[in-house]
Length: 157
Image (cartoon, rainbow, N blue to C red):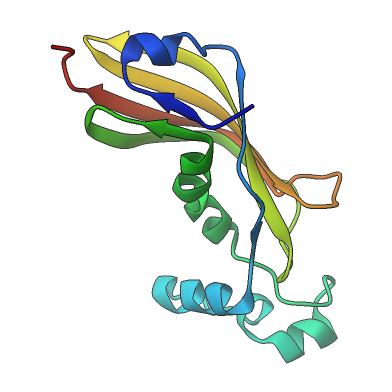
């Protein structure tokens, strides 16, 4: 499926119940993991100390912070769908997010998305999206869950 451009609540509603597609693969690198650890004050060795992780961790290398992989959602989502004609977009909810497998430094990940439902809240679109972060060449995903965005579309003139 190609990249979608959505310009209204009515257009968004047309895709309800459909898989919207997937992003490009994005490779997780150590510099990114380290910067995330510093910014979030989560500098646990399993993420930050490559030599120790290689020696002592069950993964044999550093792993990405789970929340780093979640923080990539807007970037990866934007490769699947562009929502235009907006006054405002709000991250509303993450429900039932489950981390299934660690993302090891050097892994490439991509987002797969399905629009579960769209609810009209007096002109504001409440979009529930099933997300899966796939790891290239792995059967098990990094995580699965449902995210909700609120899209405040500009009135159609």
